[in-house]
Length: 471
Image (tube, rainbow, N blue to C red; front, side, top):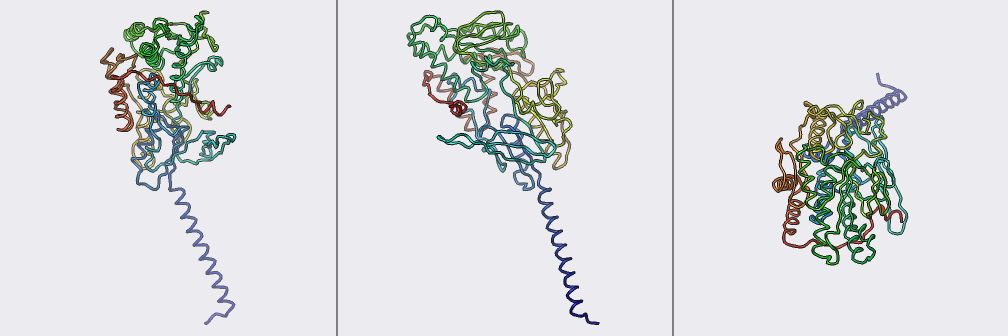
C-alpha cells in the first residue's frame, strides 16, 4: 500500500537523522583513532642521555607516521662536555665540540625553550621561549606540549652549597659560554699584569684558583695551567713565569676519589711537577672579588676563582611531584621508569639508581648517560611495539682523566694506566664518541695544528646572553 506524502516525509526525515548519526559516529571514531593511535614521545634535555634516546628512537620510527617524537632543550646544540677544558686552553675551537640538535632530528620536532613545569596527571609539559630584539625588553611566550611518554634527561647544574658569595664571584665550567668567558678572562688577567706596577695586585692577578678535586676540577686545572704557562713563555716577556700561581683546592684528603689511591697519588705528583699547588682537606668558606678564604682561615689573593665543586639537579627537577632522593634526583626503578608514574622515564644526572655492583648510586658520568639512553629507548620501543623490557645493570668499562699536556690517568677494564699511554687512550676514546665525522676531523685538525704553532691569545670582548639581558 503506497505511503501518504506525510508518511513519506517522516520516513525520509528518520532516514536522514539515522544517516547523519552514523556519519557523525564514523567521523568521531576516525578522529579518535587518529588522535589516540598517534603516540607522542617527549624528550626533555639535549645532553648525552637525551640525544642518545632521540637518535635511537629516530632510527626506529623514522618511517612510522603513528609516532610523534619531540625534544626540548635550552640550547639548540649538543655539547661534548669531556672536551670543554680544551676549549679553555684554546687547544680546540669552540664550535668543534658542538653539534646542532636538528642534525639528530630525522623526523622529530625540536623546540629551543625553557621548561616551566610538568603536570604528570594531565600529561603535559609547559615550555617557554624568549622573544627579544636589540632595543626591546625580553618577552616570554608559554606553550603546552602533550605527551603519552615522557623522558626526563635534564642533567644538572653547578652546586655552590648555599654559598652566595662564591656563586657571585666564581667562574664555572658547565657550558660552552663558561669556557669562552673563562678563557677571555684568563688572557685579560695577563694583559692587566703587563700594565700594573703594584706588586700585591700583580701577584693576585697572576694567581688562579680551581676548587674541586674530581674529574672536572683536575682536567680544568691541568688545561688552565698549560694555557697560562705556554702563553707567558711565548708572548709575555715582562712576566716571570715563576710568579704564576695555579692552585687546586679540594675538601677531601685526595683528588680523583673515583680512582685508586696509587693513581690519585700519581696524579697529585704530576700536577705538582707541572707547577700546580694542591691544598687538601680545606674547603672554601667564602669569597670576594679579589680573595678566596678557606675553612682554616687561609686567604688567597686572586681575581680568578673557578668552581668545579659539585653538581646538583636543576630546580625544576627538585620541585617535581614524584619520589626524589635526598639530593633531589628522581628515583627510578631498574627499567629507568620513574617510580609511581606511568610512561615517564628519567636518566642521566637527574636520575637516582643504585648500582648493584658498588651499592652506591650510579655517578653522573657521560659513560653512564650513554648506556642509560640505550635502555630507555629500548624500553619505549618495547612498550609501543611489543617486546621485552631490559634492566639497566651496567658496569663501567673504565674511567679516564687528562691531567695536562700529554699526561693522563685512568682505569680501563680493571687495568691501571697513566702517563702518555693514558693520555692517548683518553683522546682516542673521546674522539671516537664525537657524534659526526665532520667534528672528528675538525678536532683532529685542531690537535695537529697545536703541535706546530703557538697558542692563540686573541681575547674576544663579548657579553654572555645573561649579562646582556640584565643591562
